[in-house]
Image (tube, rainbow, N blue to C red; front, side):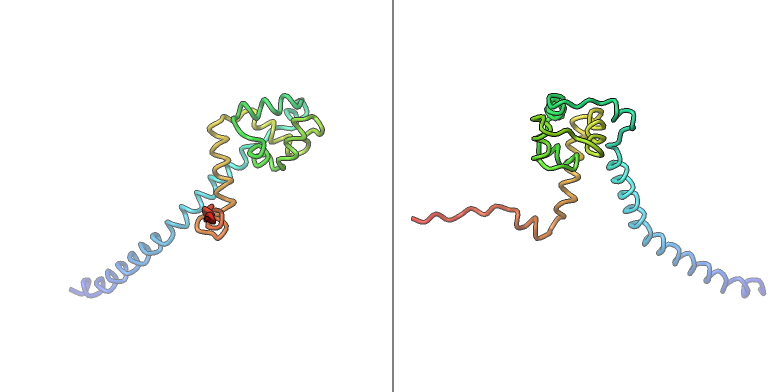
Length: 150
């Protein structure tokens, strides 16, 4: 009998601690999920890298740059978005006026190993990052038909 009177308050206390732990785990789950999503997106972003030797050995002619872009099935603008350059810069590379160098050349070398499907996913992710859902920029981007004057 003395043992029961001693253990009953302890049992209630253990039950209360378990309840608190359960609530903490429920609160922690969304944060853990968000951390995993961030880690996955970072791993996808770092996908476009190449070794220094590969970059040095690469010879990008205007034809090769255009051929790479066409092989991937993307426009000059989209290649610029992936590489981090303007559409004008990509046009200059393809016309032979300038050559890509530095990090942009590294990304171009890395793009050689990427498949069309992966490129489309990267572009979709970059578009999502540019305009968050429900933002004013997204709402303003919708075209409203103009009324014709009779």
